[in-house]
Length: 119
View (tube, rainbow, N blue to C red):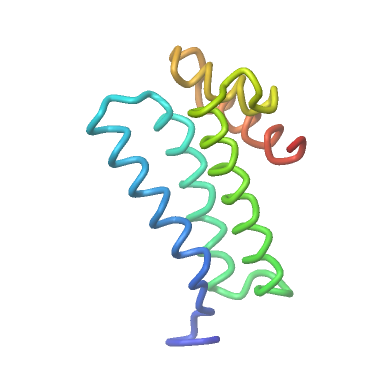
């Protein structure tokens, strides 16, 4: 759907809003996972802008992939919160290093790519 010359991304908008809610909660409770999620949300925001501006041939497919990647993050985070030892290793490393403040922007981006492709 196009509105004001921008392609609408309602599903991706919902995931980004959910990410914002989690980040706010993490900040209020001083949980360090927000370090990774901030980077991941920034990445999703940039993808959303490019989808909305029509920079992808198939905007519906691109939005669906972005949403699936966001779902994978939330699935992994829920697993990590309930049973960290059985969380897929790539995600466990991501969350562990965020909590320990042992990563920087490049590390978070690399780990994020690795998590998305291995889950």
